Image (cartoon, rainbow, N blue to C red; front, side, top):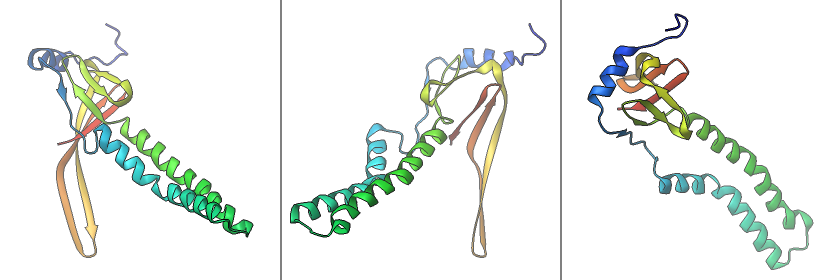
Length: 154
């Protein structure tokens, strides 16, 4: 065994003995239908401006600003909406999809073997609204591996 490589054999043996079938992690808005609905809602404002542009063309607007303005706004709004969608996909890649005897399978096909697990971090969320503060203890687990981390809510 290479001394420079981290190897956690105890966790790997425990997982092989206790996890017989894959355990699917259920995420909020994790279904395909919910994902489609969220994207439809996100891109509804640019689509609304595009439809408004079609209506102004159909009604025969004479002013070029009235005719092409909604199309310009629709095109410009596609950039922040697309950026939000890309950011959501980037954040989602760190979520666990399933746990099995070999390790954690993440979104987008990432795999983390149990023998490369460094530690488990219990995430506590602190919120403050006005003069009231609230603490939610251990609402999320973050599994830190040698090649990255994977997290899920409890």
